[in-house]
Length: 110
Image 1 (cartoon, rainbow, N blue to C red):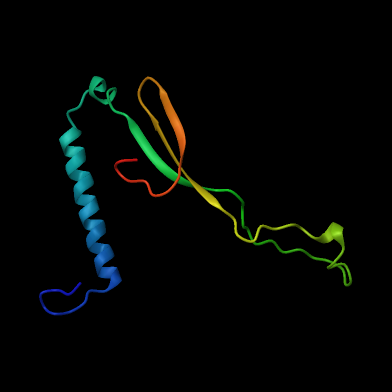
Image 2 (image 1 turned 135 degrees about the vertical axis):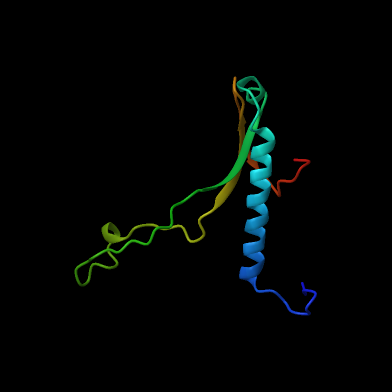
């Protein structure tokens, strides 16, 4: 992307502008819904998605005596490439909706 001045903006400039646009959009949405009653909010279906890590990959330090590094009782098994899955769920005022695994890329059709 090149500006009208013929310069390429930095990544940080683009991020700042996007954050400002997101804040303005959230404020506009909040103002549009400020007058809603509890009955209005009860008709809303809330949804979100999240990544779930299947294995922890915390770095751990272990102290062993000299010569113990290869003993079975001092070795902890690890996962080379810990996986993650994407999950989607929803809820409304009256009921919890399903929680589903997202396979592939989640778009408006999915």
